[in-house]
Length: 269
Image 1 (cartoon, rainbow, N blue to C red):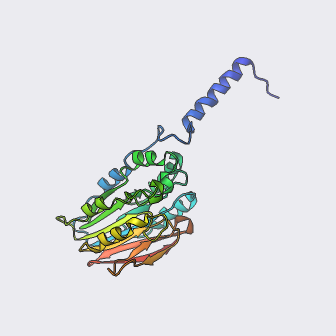
Image 2: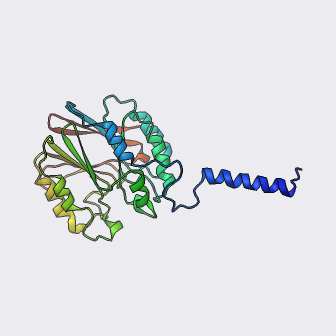
Image 3: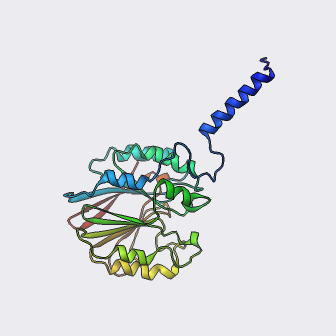
């Protein structure tokens, strides 16, 4: 049996405290630590570039990585085997409880992708201090970018988390983003909660879908949240609204845009 003197015991306890400080959060409310990455979306968009001359845009749509760290490993391994992928979009619910460590764990795996990835805010990401974590780690909740002549509009559609206040999604901001723009031929929107969900503000559904229907060159509205693949048409515009399956279901969506047409392929891993 090992016996410690008072001095030795104090040194041991001090060492354990220092190790703990380096490896663990003090609180689940912590929004950063010494290893936290910042502004991931902006950095990855810079790495992605504008895609000038890319007449075939191919990207992966996935979502709901919460509680699915092992499946996220399989995801990036599968995606890295597919040629010609330009980028990956995680359409919300990166975390289950809006905790820093959860987002860091998923980011650590997605960093291993051979192409840039982008994150969109989900309803679970808004719990606890999740909004603050997301803003610092990934960036704005509403943002857009142009790649290959296509404008991708990523936005917060998690209405329930705002008490259905009539402001989320921000339809006025979306309409501004959908205005004609030099160098843009088509539009794609990406958010977490689809307009057929009870978590989407029912007062905004008509204005939301009408804004897309009124936009020449609008190709698709992409979502996650329900954890199961679904293709639906909420109006007579012919615009496809698509929900990708959850990472935990070992499936993602491969989206291809070529010759002014969009197609979707479900891929298992």
